[in-house]
Image (cartoon, rainbow, N blue to C red; front, side):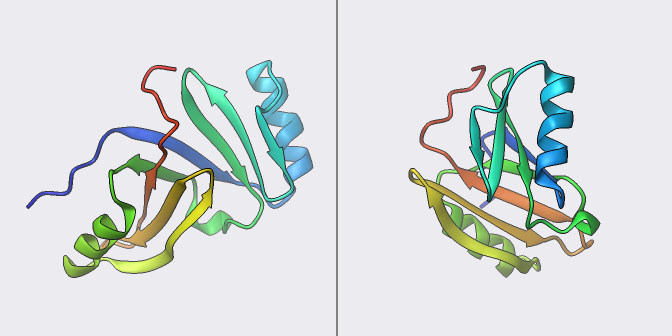
Length: 121
């Protein structure tokens, strides 16, 4: 059965210097983040999430998260198809579940279930 992706949800930028990244993105977007914690900063950009993650590895580049109904099931399907684990499924708060895998080509694929997401804002 093909993987059922529900569309793009989030792009997370590694931000080793979270304060500097938050200032820069706030200036570029003309708005303050709607979510601002030491472990993650989130901006609403046209109904999608632009995130800043201080713990992400800049070598992985921007992490793009695709929506799915069931993150653990999607991860299991991708692992069975040759992907390797990157970050295991976890509830990051508010019922939002994320995970990442490495595709056979080495890129990082993010998966997210966000019960609060509404397409188009």
